[in-house]
Length: 204
Image 1 (cartoon, rainbow, N blue to C red):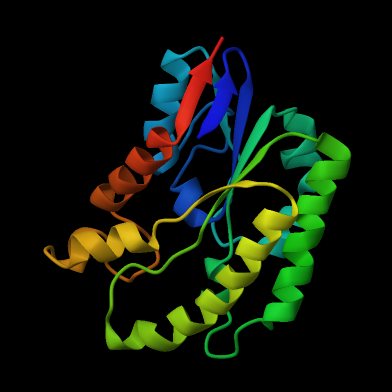
Image 2 (tube, rainbow, N blue to C red; image 1 turned 120 degrees about the horizontal axis):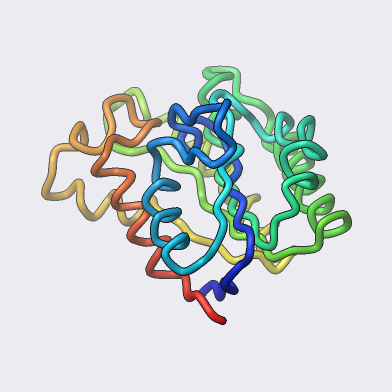
């Protein structure tokens, strides 16, 4: 359970799964992803929510914009969903897992050293079981193993979605949740938001 204080600032970071067409000219726009749903819940509880995710980003992109889009936002809590592009954009020659691990480790170390706020890691995922996802999922899972180790190392809260999608897809068509396995549709975002909210407690 993640305890979030009223009047605090919550920053969401990541790639297109989090960005989801947010308006870059409106610093308060949350886009149309799970952040919009979670943000509505948090704002009702007097919490400021910021989305600084950028479509196409990989871990090293978060490092590149660390000062502007992490430090300068002055967050009290940070949610990070990153990693699927490090597999997808490089497929079939995915970025080596050891390089990915080093970059993610450096990101979490910088947050600890320069911002020193609680971090919630949202585990990257692939939705569905089409044959073409098999190799990508295998590569992503090797990266997920390293993310889990880093979450433990840096004492991060951790939320995973893979099993939640797997459960609903036993009974429902995967294309109700994502067309190409990477970007959730509305039902997919609602599933994510529901789990995140379930793991949040706002306190005065």
